Length: 262
Length: 248
Image 1 (tube, each protein chain N blue to C red):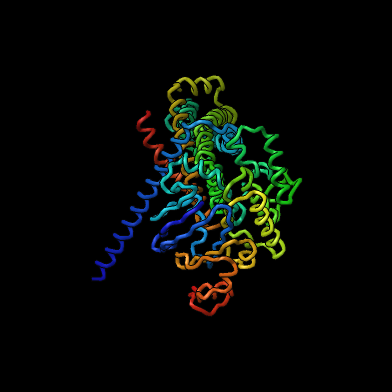
Image 2 (cartoon, rainbow over the protein chains, first blue to last red):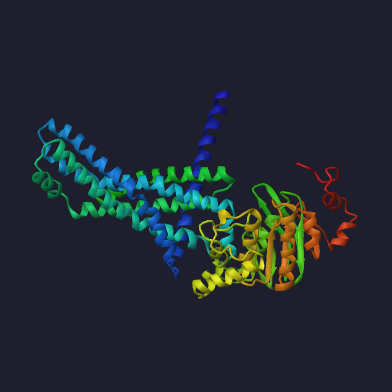
């Protein structure tokens, strides 16, 4: 009898969690659709869009540079160790270039921006919600989604691929530094191997993924901030939620995008 | 001017408004009193369409607020100005950008003209010359007054005040009370304030309405309210812990 009670409680708990998840996803989709509708309704607030591009893109350049260079460097070291075992050291450049452009460039940039800009977006909008600034916008006949969310979503969609380009270049450069300076590869051969097997499609599909990640980060972070409730604690929860959900969705969608694109 | 008819609103299982009725005449100053959590804020948010009723209607200027579509709601909202409890100034914008926000969004005025217009409104609330300050540098009383300047920027016909004197010292509270009276006299606006500050209510109200358990239980002039026979109203206005009002 006791066992059955426990089983029912477990089932109920799982059921509630699933219901909550589905409900939240539904609300995110509604929010996204509303954002899309406002996106195509002129006029666009260029000043706000540029401000957000600076916030999401320009201000993330520093962390992206460090992240990408060291990723490229460690990738060269690791693949060298592995490839040496079957005398394929000359392919280090190829592996670094392909991994960066197809996978690590967009994904790591997405994760970094989710942690940096996504968190700040959710916290800013969440604070605006709990201090009634979002209500104040509405009372002044200004749609809060158009004024706050649309510029952030546009900025995310544009800036993520641009950051990814920086990330790709620095990753390849980091790999080159380690390959040539530490592992004594021939610079000309290394460079040629890096680009010989690289196709435009590798780069573009990576950039396309980055744009999708930009959408995910901005929509989720705005959504979480928008519906924050319960003072400072609520803003904290919204911020954590925004970062965690964005990161999860980046990793999950990465698999499916890769399966479709490549 | 504003009519609240049989308004019902619940949040989860909590029935906040339970058939509230209220009629506000053009040009009058109506103050809604009630305890914390009695639904005053919910009521005022329905009047400006920030919340949609579960049941009932809000008629503003002959139009049913709940039935209007997005663009029509915005057109009606341009007749409103609202002062929020914490002023709700946009902290990323300077004082003049806050005050001129609606002008920037809805008119073709240049920044210079908007700045000048914002300066005029700031002068009306006794804060000339602070155009370039940021909200974070202002005191509580100043924030409220900048919020008021922002609320009157589009020359509204209706002004809503959400707890205008809460959190202010008694002198600053009186400054705000005087400003509310001045706005009504100078701008001929209809005003609706919600408060639990009885000093403020008696001073600014033409009529006072008491909200209790989701219903308006009494409406009258300050004089009538002071001499009420209703034990609930009496307990509230005298601020007694003993009486029919259940203290949670």
